[in-house]
Length: 213
Image (tube, rainbow, N blue to C red):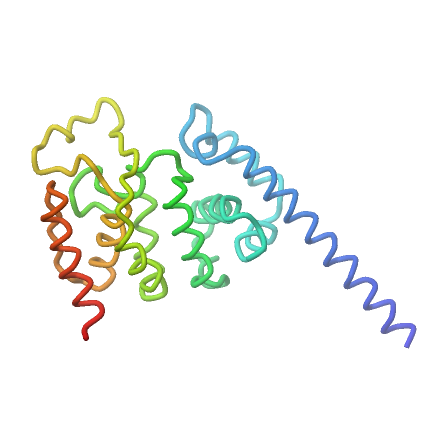
């Protein structure tokens, strides 16, 4: 019995240390934020420094920790994507899909063009394209967003001039992003126009095809 007690104590110590490491990593990532890690000057140096500050296991544990802040899990996921995409096979993609929905709603990247519509009206964007990896797992959450008409702060990066194209979306809503991802996941044609009314007709048709009576 003493051996079992010692083993249980060692396991408890390991679990506590793991929890503390994950919490520390989550706190650091949350403090730094997405722009500093992926966009600002010298971000690659900072990203490399953060990666070396913890083990890959720590990053994977953080991404899979449902009690950790969504922002920290999102940042951990994006860092892992640049290092070892096979981590997707070792994490709960249903849970991670919800993290990316929260990231979309909260604009965790601070730039909504990352989520789509920058180059074309069917452009899923650097981050939005991850929903195609989640595939069917993300459909229930995205369908729920088809009723979210919130207009986001959508600003094209200077000196991008594609916004002068009269067919390009200028005002973008959460439901537009959701419709874009769903159409590509299910391979359903979708033509989003600049008019909200015309767009809503397309979204209703998409929803009817996804949820037939």
